[in-house]
Length: 593
Image 1: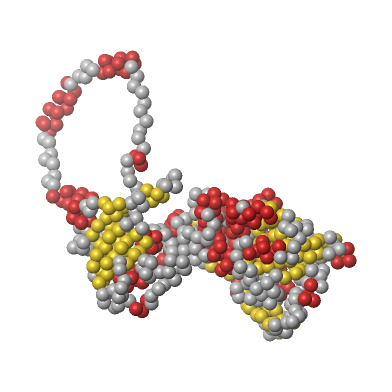
Image 2: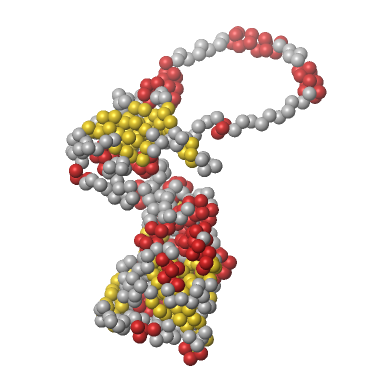
């Protein structure tokens, strides 16, 4: 329903959905809430209601808070036609009489009089201007004299609060029960946790509005038949703006990936781009300098990967690096785990605990949800081989998704559910559980239409055996092989050899990782790792200082929808289009949206 409301009336062009949807997604990162008012909203406050006007506070370009204040109510209360310039113009046109036409004789007399008039001052003015040319005066900036801050008109009846956004000529009525339920006063919300201190079902059904006032913090309402002992009901201006759809409820640093990336922006990469953009941070600076620490967190949000150098060769160093961000996610592999040949002797078994080559994959897709951030600290790497591989799967997914929607050969990437499982023994001693069995099913590509994100689930080493009667496997294999070629292309894979003291942090849901085979007889390769759950990392990311995030992003909020359009004008798009047309000649690019 939301998609239909947002996209109705939008046309399609070579760049995708045209300006009307762009107007939506440039306002919010997720594109969930339109910045234009829905037409179902009332356009007028009933004229008989008591009201007041208030100019909202605003942070200026210098970062200073300009306070708000009361504004005089216009004549007629702002609710009747007397205040509408358009109605006044129509009424003046209806009430005025048409001008009396001139006769032909009167017209000739006027023309004769104008021709006989002679302006003798023209030569004198010209000579004066030649002798004393006037200096050009700078025109004053109109915005210096016009207060562009938002003004709200507030009115109320016993059952509803009416809020008018005068800038957009939009009125929204808010139910008194919802207002009471959203009260953010200290008696209703715990100041330390934000948890509610009352039950929604305790709100009396006959509650009503008696009075309202405004401050720079928000609206304060006096309610009749309220819960016992409760004073004024407080609603912040932010909540009011969300109700008016001036902003989305998940704008700002909301703990969801689209909202966070709306603040930090995103950089999609291949081997060349990441080689130039990837950051290597000193361990001491990461641990002690907050500015450097937030740079690392922002890189994880924007690019999905960051490196830390000179990490001490201690067994608990990976825990220190990880816990600097958030709590570690404890799994059946333990709080931390060792990746080395023969490492399964003291933990749960895993194909990674060998010297074999490991193709690009994501970890723990058989859990729900899988961990988001993975941390790998290199304690030793003295053997031949064993280079680490990384590939930006989300870049490939965003480029490929428009073709998946129209190609029968690529469709299985989105329609067929792939089973992932872990079924093995726990070799820890003493072992809390001798056996483990985990199982989840996911498509390779899952597109979120509201946000424009395309999620990748790719972990061939941990796929469960397919059903013998599965008739969808053969077409899926062809599509999966094509996807594998895209993510494993030489220009797509960033290759690096981790040395002792190196630590890599990457987004397990975005960045695929793997390694080359290595020779354990020529030395040792020992990585120590840990995970962070999605909720824990995103909660931490909400604390990124806005000025630092916006310094990387720029002035405009990043939008996933617009990023997808920009990718269609990149050299990557041309390469992927060429490969897709070779894989499925029935796909016509003109039908790709």
